[in-house]
Length: 315
Image (cartoon, rainbow, N blue to C red; front, side, top):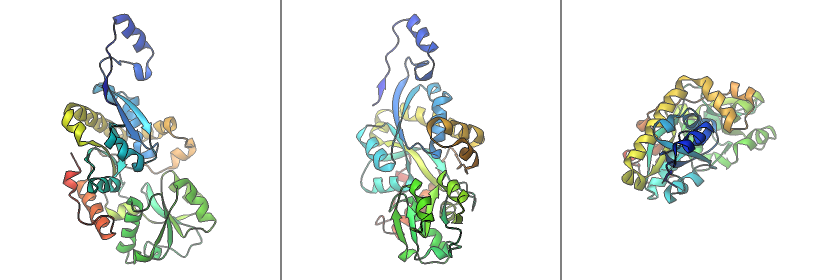
């Protein structure tokens, strides 16, 4: 997908193209790349980088392609369909363990580190007998993907609170379906992220665990990654992408109002809801120790056989 855009053939043509604005403005001699990302709150800095011209400042013309998650993004990067993509740390550790040559090139999104005020958590119906993470032992809990960062960190919350997670029944369910399933009594609890966390709380549920915070107060949950072949073939491209993302992550982290505004441009979220949700943190640097912590939890839960070398995962 990587290609060098063709130079304009005349000054007149350049002027006419620039006047059109949008993706084509300043488009001569920019390097075109494709980035795969789920259209969720977490990737607001990616969309801000495109809108604010941070990518163009670093010589890049970026096409953002929506994905359904790691199951699409990881093979997409590995095959070359995407140059970069956004994925959570658990999926990337599993991919490396399977021999896929992927590396993190930029942080993506990080926990706020605030118990009860993070952008993900475990909620229960308001009349539930469950009032703490420990009480989740033996419960039926919804997560969006089995054997991933949701169930891994929820099990850890239960352990940290003195409970036994071995008999928890995790059920795979899309986030939008969880609030109704809770209301109809199909679940004891659900792990939700924004905006579904705020929707569930507005519907009367109660949050009993901040599972990201319990795993690590500065948990780097997801990152932008690429394949080693591209790193070896074009280190300048990697440097440009990383520099633009770092610029945009800093911009987003210091301007929550800009994050909320950009959400109206690529999600279907109601504007009132956008104002209510808890935003994540967007530091430029990922916390490698927190990745190691997730790797240790994955070993404990049997997702992988041995402690991963997370130094190999990061560029």
